[in-house]
Amino acid sequence: MPRRIAIVHFALCLLFSAPLFSHASDLLIHNVNGYTFTQGSDAIARFDQLLIRNGKVVSTDPAVINAQVNDQTPRLNGRGKTLLPGLIDAHGHLEALGSLIETVDLRASQSAQAAASAVAAFSDKNPDAQVILGRGWNQENWPDQRFPEASVLDGLNLDKPIVLLRVDGHALWVNSVALTLAGITAKTPDPNGGQIVRDPSGKATGILVDTAMELVKEKLPGADNQVLDRQLSLAYQHLLSLGVTGVHDAGVEPQTERMLRQHAKAGTLPIRVYAMLKGSDPGLAARLKKGKVRGDFLRVQSVKIYADGALGSRGATLINDYADETGNKGLAITGPKALKRQFQMVQKHGFQIAVHAIGDQANRDVLDTFATLASPRALAKHRHRVEHAQVIAPEDLSRFASLNIIASMQPTHATSDRVMAIKRLGDNRLDGAYAWSSLLASGARMAFGSDFPVEPANPFYGIHAAATRQDRDNQPVDGWRMQDAVDVATALRLFTRDAAYAAHWEKDTGTLEPGKWADFIVIDTNPFTTLPDYLWQIEVEQTWVAGKPVWQQP
Image (cartoon, rainbow, N blue to C red):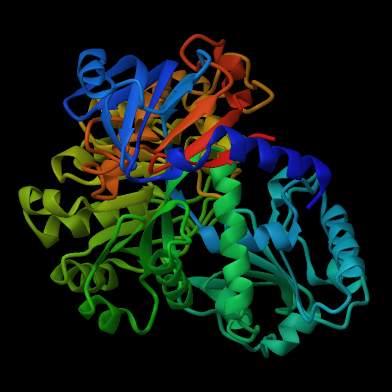
């Protein structure tokens, strides 16, 4: 153990000594600048002390606390720091996050050649890797804004498959070795809901969109349990360092679900996970029959289904053609008839339906299908969700509330997609795009997340984007379509209380009310008093789960 880490570890052991870790003991945290929401009000409540017993909140009310503590009650002075409920990311991907930490991160690449150079550097450091995996490239950030080709990767002269996922997870860039491994030739047909991008002669260029990605993925060796265990652990610790105490994992593979269940059973799951089963899993029907998992740290009672692809790769399905590609309306991964069959199967077993829908046509198809499934009152008990809900026809906005469908949205998508979205849609089709305030005003329920690792997992990036409609360079200066911004308190509520509601978990977490788990964070800046431009720079100093400190800033 490095000396600095050892010193920090020793200090933590002194500060949080054995009595504070005991579930049998109380802990009074006082002299804090605390904020929480309640189930009965959207107003934020202030407090300056927090009494914890057996890992749960007893009270933040001074009168109640004074009646229950004595001279022997362990106390911790919060030194006036700001304390918030633990943040909940309503849409992320744990396995992909852990994998990204261990593979080639291409999110900062400014050209195809720069991305290839990052691959070469990774290969030099990992010569025994049988496959080079990476994620994060985005041709919209490159000078030519064109899809890259296999020839760029072939120039590295690596006799192994190179498989690089686009930032949104809806396109692969591969080398010729990978194309050969998958048996892709000029005669290979496009699969339903996917596209093999080809040059004028019909030859595959090395870009595979949506379901076409499976042609390569199915030929790659899967991660063994040891690798998956390590990657999930990396993801947990990264999220805890950002103040995320709960995550909705949007579409877990069967192997990942088994690993999460093992971690929960062994008591080694340090973060609360709401896992959505993968809708395309051939074994889904059999898995649904086994029923839900409803533990303190792991819940499995939702299924993630894809209606369409992504806007950046022109896979999102649109009512009208893409503004920058006439004749293209996107790729329907699951059409209306198939959606209805899947919806009926999932709801039959009492599971929540969570549907990826980005384009306005996909969102309309999903809402239409929900309308045929059951009455709005019956739909309400399941709390079905649309994941992303990025582009919605203005006339469809009110249908989320009328059908009792939750909009699970990611604020940083608006700021990172802004320039691309304008190109794909045109200015005259943006009224229902990234429309957080409009949806809330219509009475819709909403939850916020990040879609990590598509976007960075830091929830304060999302709170900043939600309040300012600006990127982290504070551009554009006046914000983008500010009529759909929300205030800081609303953004925080959507990352806490309302995210817990979207996971049927609001009775146990999401706020610091009596009887709920004492999941909270201590941060270095008060988000309600700092300038909005600085919201994204807020840092987490401590993260607590179930009344225990699980991460501290070195």
